[in-house]
Length: 381
Image (cartoon, rainbow, N blue to C red):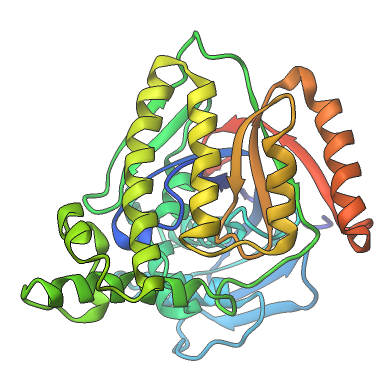
């Protein structure tokens, strides 16, 4: 960088070992932030201009902070515009920023978009002298992604990016927004996160992510209708509001795809509860096994997972040195994550790469293996 900047924000990527695809239904989720992510260097501007450069994407972004922001431009600058949109609904902001942004891993499955949004929330707030709580940062970043970017997400990604702590598991009830940061039991073996990129990237907005959200809501709506309960607007209906007993009583009446989405939600709820107990007791074998089971349900009940991701998952399941793992993110392309024994990283990288590229040699130049460590959440450096 040729320019000197006053501020530097690091906003980490995140993984979710248990609690997949349920935050938008107010489910229970877990997560880790880790030591790779988004770096944003910036200076506040007092002329109301936002000027940004990216080390990942081409072109520069420039706009006025007081311009109306209604329509997406469909480029990487939309994330800054989306944060300005969400923040402006709560505060009067007059100062912009000039800066540079850089990601440290390939895009796909690690919530890089949420990490970028969190960084911009923190930057625009700093430039305008606005003090935000951690939950305000989470909710503003989530709102920017839902209302401006167009992704019907919950708060899992942003919560993991903001609230996580080193050597700890984050547990969140996304209905109440209550959370716990649970330190690793000293009896638990040391582990690292394996990040295995399929070689494909994807956009959540153009994938089936939003469709799955609608299917979950439709499942809940139908269960209410079958049991003669009052209906809410579809976008205010969540599986968390429907007791499991109601699901058992109505599942055979539901369209099969809706029943599978609900089955994933209720089974994942149980897995998270069991996983918290396993984590607290230091039982990484059980915690990993539950993460594998979560991925099975993602494949068969939630019905996500490209052939590439499923191949990585199948290889992982039978590999020495991997306790557990699953698809990361929405699970349509992107990456798989795993809990790995640090002593066996070399074996894992060699074997996984060889076996995957036998099936998909076309990804020889884009398949990547990384090993990372759990880290603290987004912060100024």
